[in-house]
Image 1 (cartoon, rainbow, N blue to C red):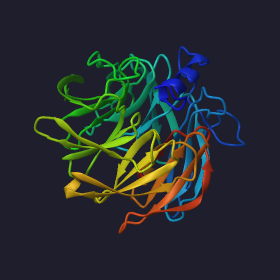
Image 2: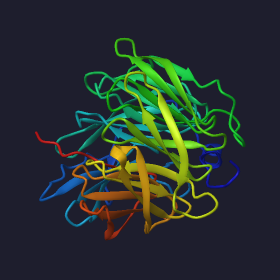
Image 3: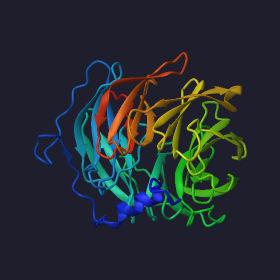
Image 4: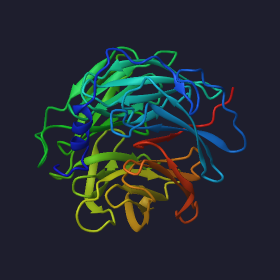
Length: 397
């Protein structure tokens, strides 16, 4: 890709001036108007308020200083700033442990890492530690459903890594690192670029989406050793640039956003073999040219799917048909911000939140359960270089 909106161009700009620290900064939380490093007071939760975490680039001009923490009201969509978890560099993607007690962030820089942050039931945060991913520019991570393994994708070096997770939620020394050495890079690419790694809904396989060589790899994860063993590959058409894959609740179909050729692809998935079968490319509804589609979301009932389009600054709405095996384009909705990098549902599915990188905002939509419509609610929330939004599931205790 040569467009300035590509991850490769953006990451190169960020890393050129980024300084590598030998060890993470002391784990602190900052509250606006408070002394830096002072303990964060417990945050009272009332009504339907939940916790929202925000990823950013700390090395970017005008970027954040760590992982943002905010509150959101699921009845109004109102977001209120609370604190910042410091000691994490370029936390551009976040993922929650199944227990809800820990959140993980990539450290997207030349010597990539993954950082664990403990989430207290009183709304406080504590950095547990950082481990090297063994690659450059990690941009995505996920937790295996067992809660025992942390999976990460190194974009710049085109590899995927596995770390064990200790009882306290902290990551251990890396147990595996797999480089995508083949096939050859796609048109306009300089090498493999792993963009996502996720466990399939049945838990039997791990899929790694590589934008650089137009391939989705299927691995089997050894749950005792934490090693990946390739079992299949799915080839996309040359130059597709697959970025992010999301499964239908049936577990038999998945939807792939291809950012380079501005298409989406419905894929069939066989849980027995791990084989992913891509269908024909479909429209994003954004017109000619590329709009850098970023990510899909699918409603819990499997009836509707939404796609974030960064260049078009919109969300495409699809009706899901044929039991998940088909998408029918309905319309596009303005996102109300610039460059929606990542989107997420609130835990109850009532809200859709969009992290808009260039405008530095988070916008919120109410989701119509019956018709799948989206309605803007609340006011855009200012968040420096917002590239990830993670609404946390409610915790008790």
